[in-house]
Amino acid sequence: MADFIHIDRDRLYTDLQYRFEYVAGFIGFDEKDRQLIRDSAPIVEPLIPKIVDAFYEKIFSYDAVKVFMTKPMSGIEDNSETMETIRLDSSPILYRKMMLKKYFNRILTADWDTAHIRYLDWVARIHPLSPVEGASIGVNYVHVNSMIGYLAGLFTDVLTRINEWDEETKCNTVIAFNKFFYVQADLFSRYYVKEGVAEIEKEAIEEAKRQEMEEIRQRVGTESHPVLMTFALIGLVLGSVTARILYK
Image 1 (cartoon, rainbow, N blue to C red):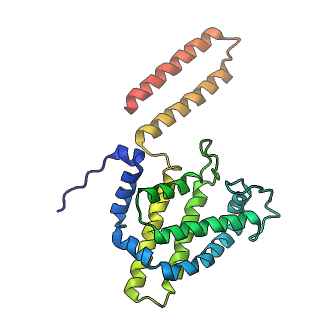
Image 2 (cartoon, one colour):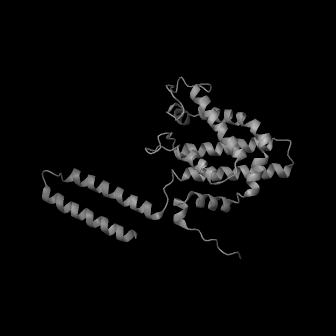
Image 3 (cartoon, rainbow, N blue to C red):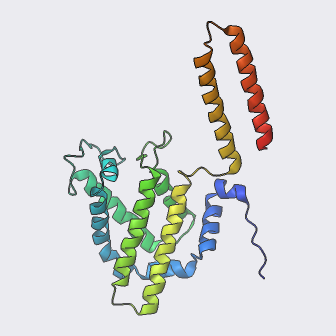
């Protein structure tokens, strides 16, 4: 039996390169896969516009996703479009299509160095609503996950129809692209998924404290029963301390 590979859990959440190497290593996204993607460029690159068009047609078929196309985005000077007026040939959509084409073209030629990993991480970082990222789009994770899955399916369908490859090359290239989409999906999860038992338990305790405080205020009232309110608050603090001890 092979020796265990030790993984530093904390570094998975603080070191981007370390996380990428872990995920890529776990799913087997190696240099062979990356070379297959690069080798596919002459055939796949001309198909990118077709893939991008199909992707945006899918987006426009769901109002819950289409609505994000009317939101502000860095690079779009004026997006006054509404759900009723925006079309697939509207300026904001043409700009988004152009950016997605550039994204895929970079994937096809990537060296997969640190700079490229940071680029993929940036793509993920601008999608959730963030006060830090001025260019954030604010797309909910359920939609992001669905879109990545749909794109992976589009690529699988297109790649399996390429006649220039033998069956082994075709199969291996499809697998390589699917591994890539898993890597990108994980980078998205960095900015959406809250992980770590301690963090989750701490958040649950804080939420319970807020709810209990609100109930106390409603039942007692801070002005008419100051003494009773004081004892209630003491009880809340003691309860919180006890909960923290239990969760350690």
